[in-house]
Length: 262
Image 1: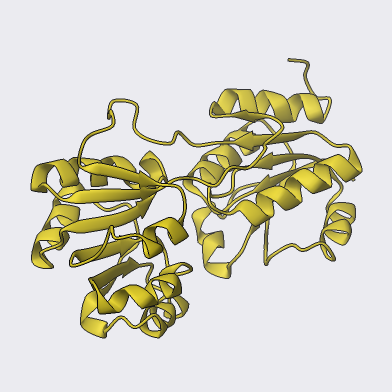
Image 2: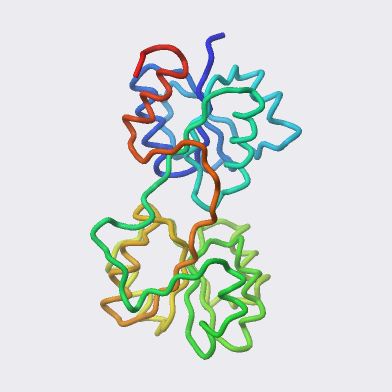
């Protein structure tokens, strides 16, 4: 069995990379967390898709069975655990690793006075950023429980993915059903603006997810409506090597599998 690329997937960028790798005839396996994430990838794609979380206990079997010869990490910027695991695997097996990192914001959008950046969720929750505000949380469902204590000082709303697990997390965090909306990105400027206006939002909380995560749209809507946009910065991960160029990533994979020098 020839060596394969392990593409850490689940993002828009990983879909584009999978298509590029397939087009270059490179063998690989894509890992995603959920069965629904498989739908991101074309049925005809030559790369196989595996679901489920890898752990310290399961990755050796995975890498052996799949004959992993290199790692292309295109996971979400906030999915730090899988990135750290992939770097660990690279180090222990002495195989090449490359992080594909999306841009942190749209290049044509400079920092603006209505945009506030915080380092962590804890800084936001324990500060006074949200006090007395009508707050829309667009941070996914995982962090919603951390905002439970904000319910007494703020009016919270949440936009989540249309998944039962995400809805349960929102309810468990104390959000009533009339303050939850389930939508799958991408979300247009007009829809984003209408939602903020419908709920009379004064503060929006989001992640520094870059253009694929709709950060540029949120910045534009915030400017148009005079709404404060609070952006939680990306966690710092010491990636050994990274790029944001698809062709560079393909060349890395070709070199790693000794198909073509770069």
